[in-house]
Image (cartoon, rainbow, N blue to C red; front, side, top):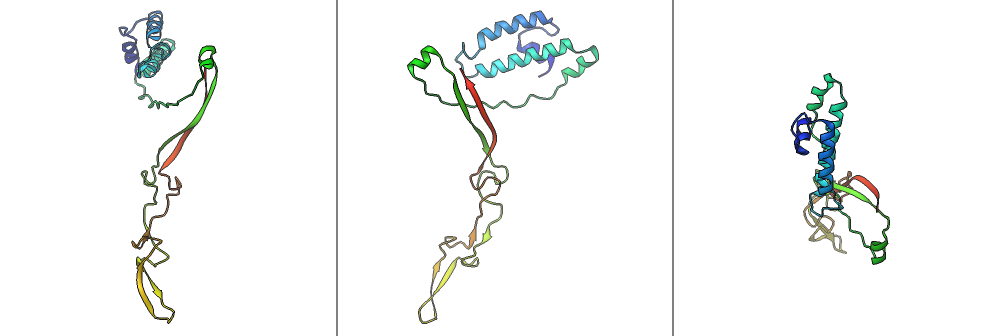
Length: 180
């Protein structure tokens, strides 16, 4: 977010002073705070409002030579929303409580693209890649050929991806948060 984008986010003309930015920030926070606004985009909007004020503060505190560099900042990193259901009793709702939420964020495995299999299938060891097994009769001659049960008659076995242990998903981050 550039400084000009930050001013636009707060609804101010470019070049407004820090006092005006703080006043606009307070007004927007009272409207978009997730505790007051139940809209699905309220928390994302709050993050953008806070980032805008940080950008304006940084630009105001930066020396004149760095102000131009502050305008050409890289794009903000993607924000991931994590939803977690919490059961509360009526007493907890009325009196208030602190709940500990923990878990992990998972993504599709980049190695196997979510399939859970390694990239190349291997020849089945039970049937030597033939797909059929010849059973011997008790006379020693070859009997009927039956489909291999290890590879289901295909002759190939797909080994599990080692990066995700065959699950197709990898853990990106763990979180642990206390919520009031």
